[in-house]
Image (tube, rainbow, N blue to C red; front, side, top):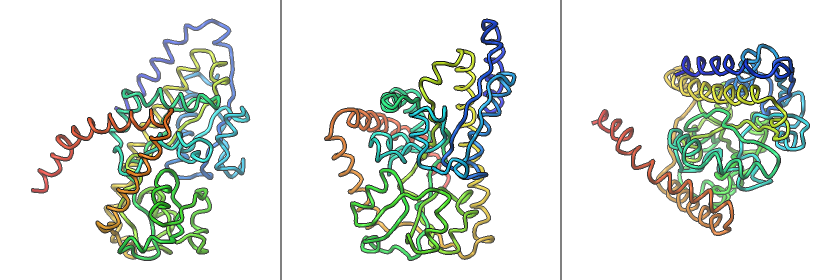
Length: 355
């Protein structure tokens, strides 16, 4: 699949070399602001892979300079950077912007929602792409998938969670809709920039946090402070995002527009594949290399409460009408169809292996 995408990318670039001479001679230099700090493992690799492919396919005529959060100093400010035109692009996650527009959070992932394959199908062929553009178009931006982590772990906790009472007053870093769910069951969610997570946990600013999965979590050192590592429920298909300033995009020659879109899609695909691979490799050695980690699953009582809270909140949001209701309806209707197929295909296959 990777080789196929690469061939498609270069074939497209070659075919577009028949553009007018002025387009062939044009040189464009963009800047991208990322939410992540410098060298932030899988996440930082995505925009750099994209920028490298853009440069190659354009023969060096289209270059993208990447500024990490260490440079621009505002990891959760990249939405405004791109909307205002200060930067032409950003790499981040859609649910960080729920304070600006609640509709943005639906394009990252939803608690107890679609798994990666289901969500990808919805975005590309089930109306998700059009709804995303409807939301972000209001702010002068385009939305593109920016790499999927797959099913994320439920987080690192300093104390074991045995009942719903253990969540009361719990200070936890958890963004997006899942934060709303935890607040509804009595926890105190907060959002903290990636580069500040370890310090917040170490200093007791938070009691727990969720990040991603073993491939990235263990390098962060969370297990040294909070050894209880819970399986996931809140982010079954976490999609990162590329944000692109609409005016800047429209100013590009058609050749560069196509190159940019293909490069973003290839980088997103590769991140999803690499994320799954790295998680599998790290998980295989977790007991030997990290004996302090205690893998746990939330008890049925807690999962039941989280499920009820999720359903109630979704219904509340849907009752607001407008595009919020449109997105929820679209996801719900597609998810029902997709889940039936998932159950009879992947789930049935795995169940058969365990019998």
